[in-house]
Amino acid sequence: RDLVRSRGLGDVYKDSYKPQNNSVWLGLLNQGICYYHPSLGKFSLINNTNVKGKWEDQNVRSMVEYDNGNILLGTNSGLYCYNPKTSEINLLFTELADKICRKMLRDSKGRIWIGTFHHGLYCIENGRLFKCNLKIKHQKSTSTRLIRCLFEDSKGNIWIGNTCLLYTSPSPRDRTRS
Picture 1 (tube, rainbow, N blue to C red):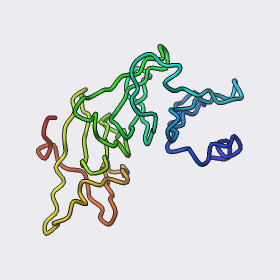
Picture 2 (tube, rainbow, N blue to C red):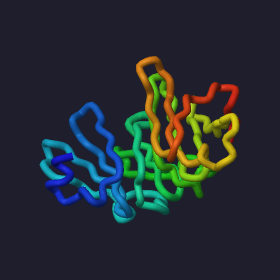
Picture 3 (cartoon, rainbow, N blue to C red):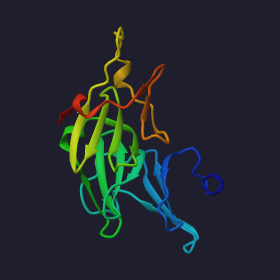
C-alpha cells in the first residue's frame, strides 16, 4: 500500500493481486490495471490502448488468478480474462456482461466466487459458471444480491457479506447453471 500511495495511485486503486514472483497487479478506477515488479522499479499501465481484444470497461473492481497465469478482472460491465503473456483480454462469460463484478475469491478448492452488485453470487467451478441462490428465512429485501465481501475461513467455509448480513456458502445443490 505504501508503494501505491508513493506513486500517486491511492485514490484510484480498487483491488490487487500478488502472484508468487514478487510482482503486484493493481485494479484501477476507470484506468485499467497496473503491473509492478521490483526489478522494473516502475508501474506499467495496461488499458485499452495496449491490449488485444475488446475491453468495454476499465473500472477494475476485483482481481483473481484464473488459470495458466491469466487474471480475471471484475469490472462494472462483466468479467474479463487477461492473458499477461499475450496481452489479450476477453469477456469470459456473456451471462455476466451487464453485471458489476464487485468482489472475487479463489477458494482452497480452486473455485472462483464472484460477488456482484444487485445480481447476487456466482461461482466458477471446472470452467463452468453457476448462479448461487442465497436463501435467508424471513428476509424480504434484495440484500442477498448486494455482495460486498467474500472470505474463506480455515475450515473452507466461504463467508459472504453484504450491507448488513453475513452468510456461509451455499451448498452445491443451491446452484444453477448460468
